[in-house]
Image (cartoon, rainbow, N blue to C red; front, top):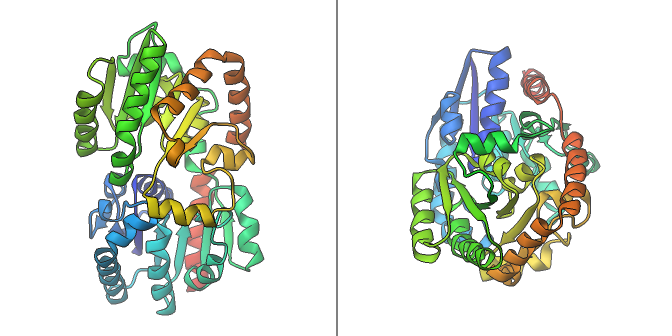
Length: 380
């Protein structure tokens, strides 16, 4: 029996963690997995000790408001894993929660692996010193990240991004529309406000008002959205009924990739959705808001002039970002219509996205499983 402790803190981490467990099972079917995960990790066999939603927070101020609860969950997880020691603990993303837990477990002799590097290339490089004390191996999904870890002599392995392998280089817009039952002959705009509660509260109304603005300035539009679960969908539909009852809209649950594949343009919150839209070769507009305190702190610490992964990977602004005070319905709407009115730019963007897609592809299943199993063997 190979015992694995794992903690994934949000929807994207749940997906990555499930992929990792699936890859491991191909070589070691005798897995026992315990920790925190969402529906995909649970389906992969994880015995989850706390709801994943407890960790799905974004922003400094938002985390501070829940700090006592998060601290208590982490303490109990630490005690659980110290009492029932896994062969390896894997923290999937959620760095501010996972790194202190990993440090405590590693100091007790438990092998620790962290999957998905935090954005140390954008801000808080000093974290690498703490990371060196917390992890035995860092698994990165973007190739440029390895140099940062090598600089601090932290064992690192580029495993590629599973989404880059799962999503084909060529996509099928017509097929996706047919699967979703979307109307033919319409221009489809996808609205993806995020998965966390704090993101939904910040973005849903503004994104819906942007949809209203687009409808007033262009004909023949149809809007589509996918939410992560029934609660998020209910919140979205309630606000749509209050804000945008007159615009044609289709709403789905847990079909985000299909919705974005079907779209002509995607309006989204910064995060994994931006990477997904890039891999699907869809033009996008990034809108993002956080609390006032989080914004004031971040704007002083972040080194990069952009936040979305397509721009980070390209090293320049190739998709528009409307952040904080610039995240207004009119600004978002103007950027959406710009893509719709400039098809040549859309084609150029798709070509660039294809190149970025190729750069982060790897045979992730084999590399992932071998990296984890090698780390466990090295600990023995």
